[in-house]
Length: 81
Image (tube, rainbow, N blue to C red; front, side, top):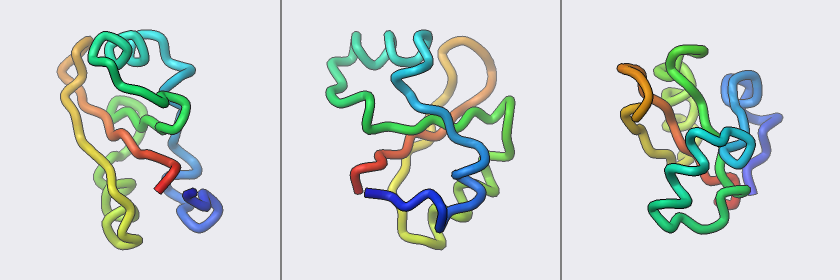
């Protein structure tokens, strides 16, 4: 499991996917399981390039997605890695 205290950028910018209905409903439709295991970082609220850089430097897997609601994007991070 990720130790967020060792990832200050992520620790200061994340939200839980399960707490965001517009996004969690999207992943429910895609049959994604264990949504409570995922963090989400929005580009319209935070600098995702800084978060992505921190994740890459710490060998943390993540995915980058286009937002289905806007022209923005977001990162998904599995906290169980």
